[in-house]
Amino acid sequence: MKAPSLPVLALAAFPSHQQHLYYIQQLEVHVAQFPHVQEPHAHDFYLLLYVTHGHGTHTIDLITYDLRPGSLFFLMPGQVHSWSLSDDTRGFILFFSEAFYLQQFPASRLAAYPFFNPTNEPVVYSVPAEAGLLPLLERIYQENTAALPAPNSDVVVRGYLFLYLELAARLYPHETPPAPAYAQQHVREFGRLLTQHFHAEKTVGYYAERLSLTANHLNAICRRLLNKTASDLIHERVVTEAQRQLKHSAQSVAQIADALGFEDASYFTRYFKKYAGQTPEAFRQHQNA
Image 1 (cartoon, rainbow, N blue to C red):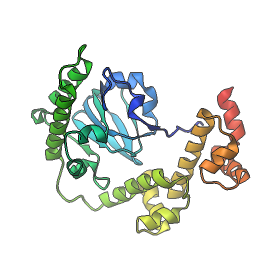
Image 2: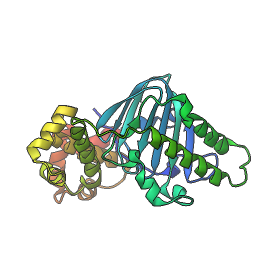
Image 3: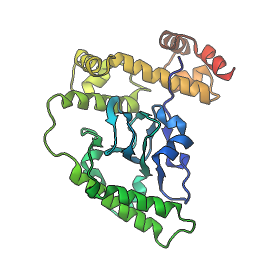
Image 4: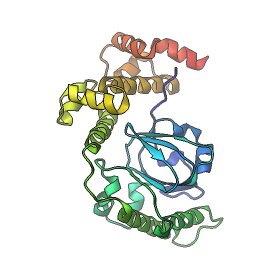
């Protein structure tokens, strides 16, 4: 079975009606226009998701969350996510670059939001209508889709964005998370580290040490929460990236092996065949058939 690719998407991959450092779209339109976003991928920008209708799941840094009406999701650059949505899912999705926010507001404030802390949950549930968040997204959407840009439109949008984040922070639960959440915290952090270092580091011991865990403990946490060991997740990430490069680039197998940290191309071929069930050459030929 073909594994999903893991691209890191740039804001420019989502053209806006106006050329800004942000993007906003109705969720159902976004999903229809960019169906590939349901597969695991990362971004180089911040993401806000407000769900008004429908249901599904949203997986962020290996942890799967329920997606339902009244839920807000917050992603930072570099986080890996994917989702599975019902056909009736509705809402808004907003992307913005750090540079867009910093043109008007301080970096310290952006870093202070609790939902942009990788040790915290990236979701708020049961948002009340009186919180006023949905109208802010609707106003940003109107600004972005206007036939003629209004004067200082970017300034206005940044103001709406700042207010949205401030109000959302009020809704974020501030109580100490229960003990089981620490296992999820370790898995989220493992997922973040894996995205950063899998090209060079492929041992469970490396990630366990960075997390102040033993390799056996990290494997046990991943097995309990994800039904896969940490080793399984490392191999999946490496093979997924290899498949992406084999499919979308013209690089030789040896070049791809080198890019993924394999000193020996023949060892990379054996590694790929062990975990993908076929050689890199056979995979590429099948994709191009």
